[in-house]
Each structure stands twice: as structure tokens, then as C-alpha cells.
Image (cartoon, one colour):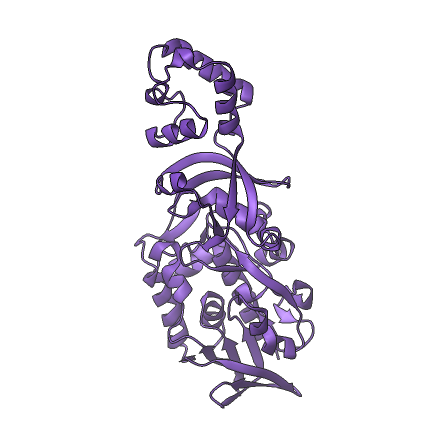
Length: 406
């Protein structure tokens, strides 16, 4: 007889696990509480689906995971980015790597990824149930009983929990009843809300390479930053929100941070550039001759923050005014009051305690036959295809272990 396998969650990890299960050995049912499956895959990357990252070095790759990096280094030796690309491309999905390392379908359409996953699952004769929530998972002897909210009970040889991250601790209650511990969930990958009209008026403008640091900490991140109608976003902010997820939650998202707008330059270099501009543009208005690669609107903004009048000429930019401008360029301070989810890409820091999982199989160390994959685990990464790669890897390892299980 075939092994009955119940997969809880119709997202990336759940579908990839099912897609790699052997239908000669397994009969699979995916149970998804939403009315549609793979919704996060659909909306990710602005509907393009950032499938994975172009990184080919696991040691380098794990640096993108604030939580779970040690466990993923072991897991990536089993199924890594190159394997993900081969898997999808062998099923007709052509992929491309962009210069920042993100990998997308050549079509720039997430539906290509969805169709590949759905076809693999349905062609094996596996079932997909939608609009069905799990109430409880109970083990009796060697068998699991998955109790659904609609009153039905599914019996299984193996259960794979791949339902994604939950934002509220009580949503994990049915997993806790199954014997597992939860690392309390808090949001990751969010933008900073800064109530400042001058910032909001610059929405859509980006600065290509900055350094951002949370006040009172030694941690900083670098990369592009984007002005929005609520504050700041962009890779530098998102990375910082991920690495500092717990610390910022403890501060209730009320905190100060500093931006170095030109981190590649020392303060002495900044002064030298301003001095040079004072000579070469002596009679020009400071607002009309920017010595850096800033947009005109941002240059005017930073001058205004520095208290420099629009009618000031370069030959008159001296003393205290230079000091203030250098300080704003190198150490511009802001205060955040709240956060906003980055587009549709809600990511949770927290989940199943990783000490309770065998990463060689993704099987529970507490209850044999119970597996975990994807964001339900206390694993999360920064933007760039890292979270999907963790889902593909853990889903694949769980499937491989179930295929081999007697």
C-alpha cells in the first residue's frame, strides 16, 4: 500500500515537497486554509517571483539568513540554488539572473513557477484541498490523525507542516499540542515609518549606496535606500529590519537610526570635495552645483536639512555651514515611529524551535513521522530569493526523507 502523506500548507514549501514525493510510494493530500494555493509565490517580486539567488557558495549564501543560517549550511549541501534552477528549467521554466543576484523567470511572470509546481503535483495524482483549516494533529501509534475545522479527520503515515509563518502566537497552538516549542513570532522585512512631510514629498527617489545604523547598536547595513510616502524602504532598510527584527520589536518600532549618505567617503574626503566645489563653482548657487552623484531634488533636500539657504553661493559655504553639511551627509539622524509591511512579502521571524528538527530529514526530533518545511520554522532571510530557497531546500529534504521511509 502507498504511504498516506498529509501536507499542511499549499505554499512554496508544501507544493515543492509534494512535487518531489514519489507517487509510486506515496498518496498525498495538500490541505490549504486559503481558497487559493501558492499566493505568496504569485505576488512575490511584484508578480515576477524571485525564485532564488544566483549565489553558488553556501558559506556566502547563509550570511543572508539572520536566523537558521547554521542549519541551512548543512541543508544546502543537499539541495542548493543550482539544484533549484535545474529543477524548474527541466520543467520548461527558463530562468535568468539579474545583476543584483536575484533569479526570475525569463517571462517575468510568477505564473510560470505556479504552473510548473501545480502540474508536477496534479500529474502525480495528488489531491489539493483548499479552504480547509487544520484544528489539531494527533498521533496514535504509528499513525497521525489530522483533525480539520470542518469536522473531517485525515489519517496519515506522515504529516508535513509547511503552512508558513504565523503573526500571532496563538496560531501555533495546534503545533504546540503536538509537542513542539515555538520561538515567539515577530515581523521581519519591513519598512520604516518616519512622520516627516519633507521625506514623503521625495517618494520614489532612491540613493544608490548608503549605510544605515540603528542608534545604540553596532549593527549596520549597506545598499540602496528609497524614499516613500511613509518614510524609508529599499534594500538597506529591509536588510536592517530583518537582522534587527527582535530588537526593533522590543522597541515597539519606536527608534532612532542614522544614515550615512556617502559611506564610501570619509569625513575628510567630504570636506575636500566641498572645498574643491567651493573653488570650481565659486559664483554658482550651492543648490545648482552638486559635487556628488545625487539627484537634484535629494541635494536640495539635504541642503535644506543642513540649514543652507537656497540663495547661498559656493564661495560663501564656509565654517559652521560646512560642518553641518558634512554631519548630515555622514550621520543624518531620523526617528522611526512604526513600520509597514514590504509590499506583499510578509515574513516572520520566529516559528518552530530549530533544536527540535533533524535537518538531515526535516523530521521532528520529538515525534517521528512529523516533518516541517518552509517559513513555519524559525528561519528567515533578507530579500533576494533567500526565503524561497529555504522553502525549496527544506521541502525537498522532507520529501526525500519520506520517500526513503519504511
